Image 1 (cartoon, rainbow, N blue to C red):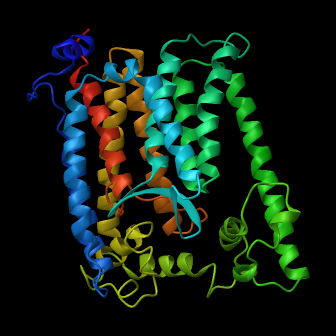
Image 2 (image 1 turned 45 degrees about the horizontal axis):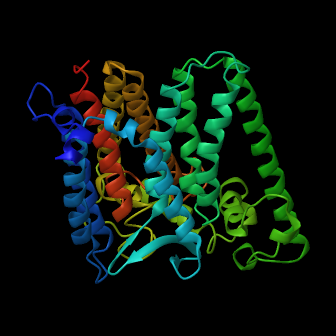
Length: 408
């Protein structure tokens, strides 16, 4: 009884009615989830794995999380923002402790709980979103000088979890956070001088990375080393906290002549073949050969490169259908942000939409050779437990903003 009074549950829960519930996003998400299950099955048809069944379980749990999050007034997240953020930091620190965090594929990103594993970086994205929205809700931004205290607070709140995520290492998850934060700062009317300065810093970072990768390519050539076999030989000679496998991915994109096409550049090349061979209507569901024969590696075909499988089997029409469905979800997220009656709700909806946009753009651009290969999955389609649950939670927040838009 005391807990109910503290949380004021009567005001935070509302019945779902047609008038209060937005059906546009969930309808598109259901179709995207079906795409994911069908093509995870197809990508693994030649193996004895049945991760499409596990995906169905994750999606069922995600649906529960989506509905539960949508039924709770999003303003409750503002009250608990500090607790959510601290919990995310504890989990990020815990995963880096030897013996607690699980090491897979050279990265220490998971906490194992029996048959299931949890990836704290996914929860950290949610925590950073809520913390950023909470900080900006309680602050008034104007000139950079007037906003300096808020910017320092925000830099610490965003920078600490990003550094912990990079330490795992999980550069892909860390890189999707800044666009979300900058979009939320932009709509908060921060001076354009800040964004001009940030753009300058970004250009310097890109230049530094480009120079470092160029020096790495020369290092390989001078020492007669193969990129796939360098195994960190260049890392002590660099001033940037990058691993050689990350440099290899950039090289495979920017200087393919420097990379062994049968090694580092293999995934990217086979993905392009998959996408290009689909034509207009594709080869047919389960008829794709790249994943079935193992040319598109089976370890990535069902997650990071699932769009390649879709493009091969359903062609341009299937690909554009998936992109169109994501377009509906993202457009509707911006619409809901505009309908929000308070700053916190608008920032939450915008942050979720930008985060999803970055995931969709980078993943699809990666499969068609527009950006270097990064471990960034495709929302609601790629296989993955924690990622599916976090996406459902995030979209549940947007639904909550829509449902409670009139309660002011």
